[in-house]
Length: 150
Ligand code: SF4
Image 1 (cartoon, rainbow, N blue to C red):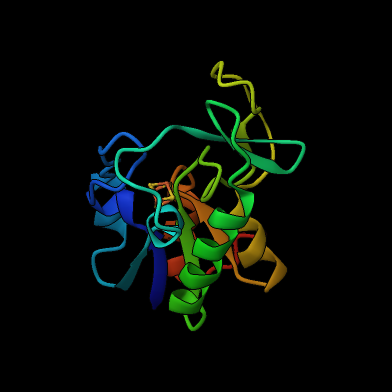
Image 2 (cartoon, rainbow, N blue to C red):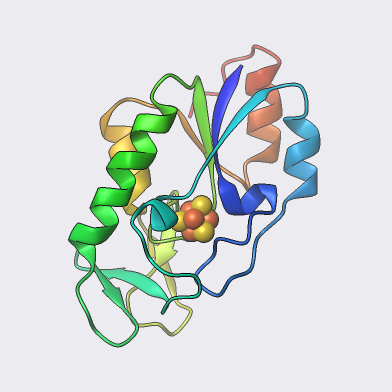
C-alpha cells in the first residue's frame, strides 16, 4: 500500500524545535509499504526552529499570539497534493497540523482536548482514511486486510 506519513515520524528533523519523533515500532509495521513523507509546517515555509503553534477556536496561533492560520493552510494544501493517491495516512498525534482526535488546547500549557490538526481536517474532508501513530494495532490490522471500523 501507499501511505502518507508525517515526516517527523520517519526521523526527519522538521518539528518546530528542530527535532524528530522517529517511531521505530511504527516503521517496523510499515516496513513493506511505500511511504510518502509530508510535513505541512515545512511546506508552509515555517523556519526550523520556529515558535510552537496551537489551535484555539479554530485559529492557529504562534506562542506569541500571531495568527498563522492562512500560512499553515497553504502548507496543508501542498501536503495534500503529495498524498492524494495514498491509500491511507499515519499522522503524528497532538500536532496542530497532523494531530488526530486530540490536540493541544491553544493555551500552550500542555493541556489536550479533542480535535484534529489542520492537515488532518483537510484529509478527512477529502475522505482519506487517517490513523494516529499511536494506533499501532489498528494499522497492523488494516494492513492485514481486516476492516478495523475507524
Ligand atoms: S507538521 Fe506534522 S510532519 Fe511536520 S513536524 Fe509537525 S507533526 Fe511532524
